[in-house]
Length: 113
Image (cartoon, rainbow, N blue to C red; front, side, top):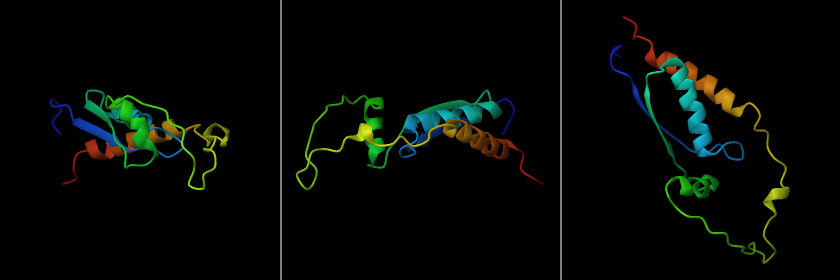
């Protein structure tokens, strides 16, 4: 890439289920990229594949949320998701940032030969 033309990058990431939202993943990748290419023009877009991240990505796309309580398939009360043990989030954004930094360094390095 020429030194006078900053790279243009779109980061469209899904969530890391139970660890990071789509935007948290994208932000960590963005920071890693900017560590290597501080003049890069970076756009971050939340995406989802229909799983849990879809609900989280909705408000970022301008949707308004609504809360509904529905029974499970056996007619039992809904799961209490707040009582589920939290998965470890410690270090995940930093690991993504370091990984993105390494990828960006390879990507921005001149081609051999």
